[in-house]
Structure formats: C-alpha cells, structure tokens
Image 1 (cartoon, one colour):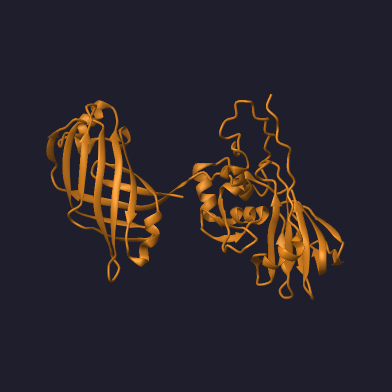
Image 2 (image 1 turned 60 degrees about the vertical axis):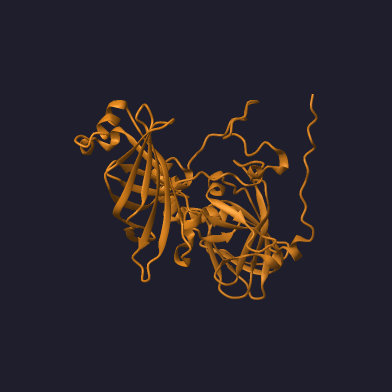
Length: 377
C-alpha cells in the first residue's frame, strides 16, 4: 500500500501590507483587486478564493454581482449602498454579504481595504484565459482573455463577468460549444443548472483530471484551454499546369508553380507573388500530400512581404479522387465529397505584421485552390 502525502496549507505572510500595495487596477482609476489564494486547481467545479480589494478616494465603484461574495473591512472607511436603499458607513471589522444580483456602490473618503471571499470558481472561465505576471516583481497575477486579448487582474468573478460581455467569446461558444454555461447565462440571464460531477474512477481520464504529476504539473496550476478556430483570411491562387516529376519510393511526385493570386482577411489584403511552388506527392490510393511555399504582398505603401508555408492532405473516396485527377471532370466534383485541409504558418520581418510569426492556422480548400484560413486561438 502506498502512503498518501499529507495535505499542506498555504500561507502568505503579512499579505495586507505586502500584497495590497501591488494590486492591479480593475476599474476607473482608483479601484484595485486580485486574489491571494484560490482552490481552483484542487476543486475546479466548486472552488473558493480569497483576496483583497482596495478603493482609493475618487470615483465611486458601482458593481453588479453575478455571484455571491463576502467582504471583511480590514482598514479604512467605506460607504456601501445598494438599490434597496440601504446605506452603511463601514469600518474596520465590519462584514458584508453581497448576494448574486445585487448592485452595490462603494465610496470612500480616506481610502479603504477589504478582504474578499467567495465560491466563485468556474472551469470555463479559467479555460478562456492565460495567466502571467506582467513584471517579474509583481505579486499579483494578470489574466489575458484568449478571445479578445484584453488583460485584467486575475480574479475569477471579474474574469467571468468579462466573458458574459465579450462578443468574441460568446460568438465562438455559440458556434463551437452551444452548451457552454456562460453563453447560457448571457442569453437567458440566469446560470445553467449543472448536475453534480461524479467522483473520478480509479481509471482517470484526461477530462476528469486537472493534473496527475503532483505539484510540479503545470496543468494542476493552470487549467488547459481548449483551442478554437476563428476565420481569418481567404485566398485564391492561379496555377500553371502540373508537371509530373515521376514515381518515387513514396508515390507520384508532381510540381506546380504559382502564376498569381489574391487574398484578404482581418489583418490586411493583397496579392500572391508569382513564383510560388507546390510539391505534391500522390500516394497509391490517390491521397495527395501538399507542400506549398509562396510569398504574399500586402496593399500597404510600402508593401510588406510575408512568406507562407502550407502542409496538408487532399483525401477522399478513390472514385472522387480519380475525378479530381481528370481535368475534364475535376471542376464538377462537389467539394464536400473530399477533404482538402492544410496547416499554415507565416514568417515576415516587417514590423507591421510581426504578430503573424507566432500565429497558427488551418485551412479548408477546394481543388481550384481557393481556401479559407482559420486562426487557432
């Protein structure tokens, strides 16, 4: 029988002094908040978290709670009111409970600090963000939305509120995950009732585990986001006639050069520079491996040049692929009867388009070499 390692508590010494002064800004120019601890990596379905909220003198903060939260005033003074007409002048030692749906106004004259506690974890929220420290010296984590790239303090409740209003996230969920509880709440105004999760069996699968390598596992600390596809650009290319190089050890090798082409998308538009090349390898079953390299020119003044590499396959039933090999029949073949998919990468030194160097795309095309490219987010 193996021994079980005792559970360890976590401690942040003198957090009120050390942590509070580095809180990231969350609203206006005087409201700051971040979590100190969260149990989201241990209990992703029902975690709790605790942190600090600081309000400096200036504009009042009006906040609509989409979750339950408690606050303990640890320093300074608050004037706290809600839509029912209640107003409390709060000071050190006071405790508040804010139910979901309440609209609370926080004011201060001299500045104040409260400790926040709540059961606010949400695996869907954490899957939509990547967490990082903006500076090495920062004590608080920041979180960047993977769908709109906006950055905010790491705080599950605020992150969730953002997703309820993020059009890119909601659009992606509507297309790819219509049962998403955040999408449901955004549309209906009420949370989705989810059944309690069964305990994982001894044979744990990937979805049931948040990490199995102990504290060293990155997935134990950071829930792994699910990638989504976002339509990014479209391209059409005119080609020279195919040149058959001949049979090789892997199949028939073909060589095709680019005459010209056009592209347009979310980040620009332009032409395909003549001279690109497509090396095709046709397997015995007529499945075709595609390896293309070509150059894009933008319509900017002066233009930018972007090197592109495609790698993919055209596959399908043999009778369909035989028609695609026939110039007389190829243009009449239904694109839905075969699969033409490519992986796309780009490279440029132009400072206006450096973001393309780290992008990843997949493309879906047809034989006439028109394809839509989807960025992987």
